[in-house]
Image (cartoon, rainbow, N blue to C red):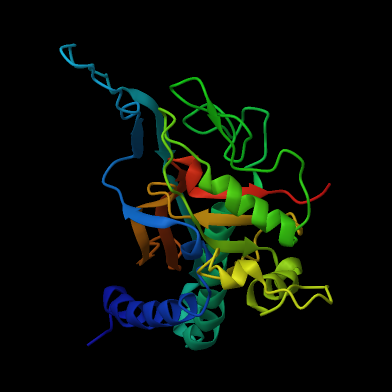
Length: 305
C-alpha cells in the first residue's frame, strides 16, 4: 500500500514540534522579570485608572458631611501584534530522507527568531520610555519615564531623574526616596517601594557592588551598605540583554497594574503540504502586546548622556 502525503505529514509533525519545543525553552524569557502576564480574549485590551477620593476632612458638629466624586483618570490601550515566521522543505528533501538534518537546523533557527523578536519587543517599551516626541506616550499622555505624570488633583508624579546620572549609590538612594513620595491621583501617599533593579550587561558589576556588598563601595570609612542593610531593593538585580542603552537602569516597583504583557494567542506551530510544489511548510505564530497601565510600576534612568 502506498504511503500518502497525509500520512507522511502526520509522521513529520510530531518530530518537528518536539525539536521546536525543546529549543525554545532553552532561551531565557527575560521579559518575565519585568512584566506581569495576562491572557486576552480580544483584539486589544484597555485598562482605566480611577482617581479614588481626596483625604477625608474634619466634620464639624452639626455640619453636613462632605461628599466626594471618584472619576476616571485615563485609559491605557494594548494593541496585540501577530508575530509569525515559517520555512518549507522541498518534496525531494522529504523523499530523500533529509528531514532529520534539515529540520533540526531550521527549527532551531525558527525558535531562536521567535524568541528574539519577543524579547526585543518587550525591551522596546523600556528603550523608548524616555522618548518625549509623543510617539510612545502612555494613557496619561506622557512618556513612560517622565518628570511630570499628570494627576487629577493638578499635581504630578515623577518616575525618573530630573538630571540623569549613571548608576551609583546616590542615584539608587534618591530613587528609593522618590518612589516613597509617590501619590495617587488625589495626592494621597501610596506607600510604593522598589522591588528589583534591571540593568544592561555593562552595569552588572556595578549592580553587584551596590546591592550585594556588606560595606559601602569605594570608601575607607567602614560604613555599612545602607541599600543592602535596609532591604531597599529586596529582589536584587536582573540583567536584560536587549536594552539598547548600555548605561540605562530601571527599578520595578510593587505598584499594581504597572508593566503588562497580554498574551492573545500563545506560541503555536503547524504544518501543511503545498499541492502544486509538494513542499512541506512549517510555521510558528503567536499574538501578544507589551506596555504599561500605571507608569508607577517602573522607575527608570537613561544614565548620563
